[in-house]
Amino acid sequence: MTEATLVTSSGYLTRPSRSRGRHRKQPAPRRFFSSRRLAVGGSAVLLAALVVSVGSAVKYIAHEPVPRPTARPSTPAVPSPPKPPIEPPSAPARPATPFPVDDRGFLNSGARCDGSETAVAIGRTPGSLVVICGDHSGRYGYRGVRRSDDAVLRTAARSTPTHEFIAKNASVTYSISATELRVTAGGAVIKQEPMLDYREP
Image (cartoon, rainbow, N blue to C red; front, side):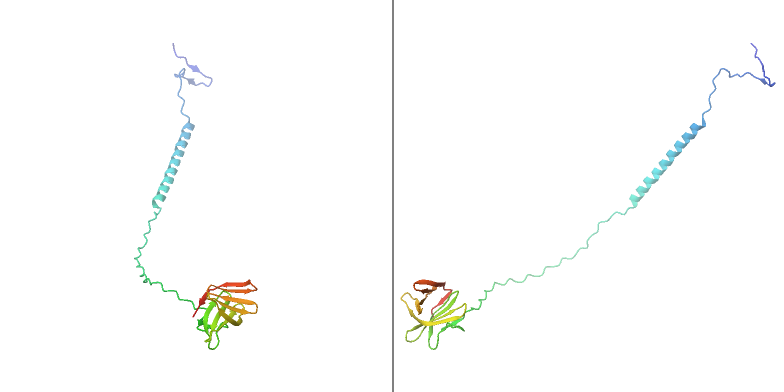
């Protein structure tokens, strides 16, 4: 079978295509290569940015100053001052007695003997100062001072076998002993005060 020659209206001869009936390979589209190039380029840019940021962080950490422990200057040991010697406790000074006495009774007070009399008994209670005075004839007298108003009582007194002294002023009786001053009237006790200090010179 001979090849037929096709005559077209234009007058040109056209050879029959030898590839008729065969499949032609399609050329690869340019869009595919372009998108692939863009993806690869973007990945490269991201990777470069990541490397730069990691390098900056490592550089910052490497150059960050590390605090060094500060050594305190050693201070020389200061010797403690010597302790003063322990002195034995001194005996407490006795306070001056607020009611000084002598052989005639209380000083600067109405409870005091006169003239040639001497104190036979001297007593002090919370509210009274009392003195029993005696003379050479054996008579006794009572000198009492009420501390609240410094009122003075002077009267005669006598002694008893129980070493008490009894003084009277009208209907009031004063009993003085080493333990108390008791004041009675008509058998009733008006006042009874304990002795804080009692002496028999």
